[in-house]
Length: 502
Image 1 (tube, rainbow, N blue to C red):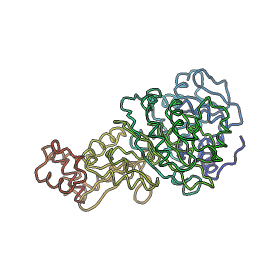
Image 2 (spheres, one colour):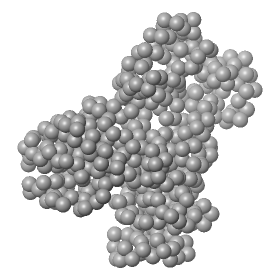
Image 3 (cartoon, one colour):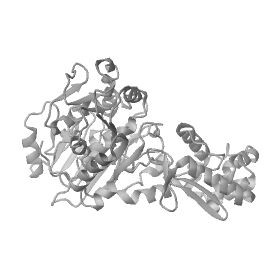
């Protein structure tokens, strides 16, 4: 396929060519064309493309002008120049290939590459270049990829794409439509489709109301099933359902672009890179735990258009229990876990103003109390040694420590476990933690009772004192509902008091 590459796409291709053999990671935001980019790489022999989700396996092949094959379910390749494979299928078919069959291996949605299935595949093959592409920034709950890739060689994130006029601005809205997903099982890293459809039944009136009150212009709605899509469309004047069975999709899209159809409702159809020239509002009524699926849905509305100022993104939310639901902050790698449910409705506005808002909302007694456990679990998963430093982890993954005379901040690590020092240089996260510990021991020994978690725990097991309780009740009047004074310990109370005093 003859496609004129954008300057940054060509720059990425040239960078990878100049790097030569190795294991490289590329971060490119949804809407910036990572598939077009890796389809135009200078291949070294045959190419293997690995995808985590089956619906993405066939998508890249239309961009190649050579022989292509598929390894998925009943489909098997036969020596084609480019093979696109489902990870779940090819991991059981490695005996069909020689280790050196592919000179280039592409890992789409590369943040999954630390999983055992990927590792088995990547340990078997011996490519000249292993290149991972990911659209979503690393979140603190993901495994590090430094055992899979050696270097991040190219970064173009969402903010860069919007600033450089390749993508449009995003205005974020949230609406509670009353669903309850606590009993829905997870399958393949996301909600089980059948159970999800059942749980979303009855939400169509609330979704239609969100459309009428919040949507602007040409609107695309993502539903949880075909049946759900039809129920939503029945509640919206002029809405049209697009499903796998729909004929004449191109004509429907053209009518939608001419504003003859005000609203399209679909189920997993427009997640696969379909070109829709004008989308002014996207409503996510298909809850997902998958960052990549969420980003793909939003990506359908990021295209620039002369008639569009910005994209209005409406997240439909409800009860999810302990599971993390992807919403607008997920595009920036931010988790809302530390924000009380009652305050999450305030997470609205321009996408790039959300981090500051979220940081403010997360600064509450509930997160202060939970912080020790949160940081400890994160460090165990990432295999970091924290030296018992009493760090506070912010929603974006930054580690903060406050003592009376100064604040310490270690920015969140990237996919390879590197952070950024004050001078702008990259260093391993563990090295930054070690340096902070050495500095604390050397110059802040008198504050050890604050920064040394073991010291804090030693005196903090007893119930909070009456004086602590009185002070907290006086200074935290707006947040008292988030504090259980019956179980509050001296340590937890001191964390709250330390925050409200500074």
